[in-house]
Length: 336
Image (cartoon, rainbow, N blue to C red; front, top):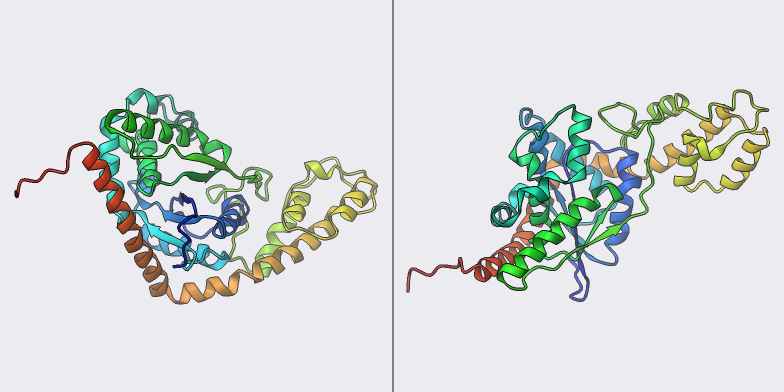
């Protein structure tokens, strides 16, 4: 892997949910591809995190890991530029998580606004279990085990980064300077809406997948919600309210200004707008699908990339863990 010693380290990860959609790409992966050129990047498939809410259904985890990794590779996450890991193949994450859990007040975790939102979305009054409540502590270990100084996240994840910073600060206060206090690298990740106008999500089945066929893309785009006030072609439209137009913008349609003008003036209809978007989306996905099909056929190659990346990551993780244990006076030597 090509590295530059003067590059800052960043870490980011995703829970393995299987095949990815355009919301994942424009919300995170596109940014990751660009960050590879500026930073020493470590990207993790965080399978332990998946257990916090899906501990009863683990049968699909292995397949979901391969599907997610295949999509990462297909869109341009390059194992020659970045380290790709599977969290459970780097057990140092778990040991550091254990050490951090000893110094983290429960109150920090209970006041986490992300947890409160998750519980509300899941219809629960309290956390599923310790793993759910302690999710930010494991996330802190994911980040700090590599001494990452920046973490690319959306605004909704900033509270988790703040807890990571608090844990690093508390550790350094108790035992001496070991960990940096990482900064959230806020991405201008747009809110990607699904074909029904709600947030794009696999659970809502309102997504356009990165591996969709042209026929599937056309079918889904045709069913997309548009400006409710533009019923006839001659009606004046409001592109800023239209999800179809927002995707034209994301896909950098060179006719964007013209489409906006004609829509507002009642010279451009929603049917034509969707047809052009479907063509644009198909051309975009045509750049991804062949690469994905390659990795889909060569699953062993995907596993090897994750294994080799995890081996490299373990070297970094071991060094950090030893430094932390030495600071805590836990590096016992009973042999001498």
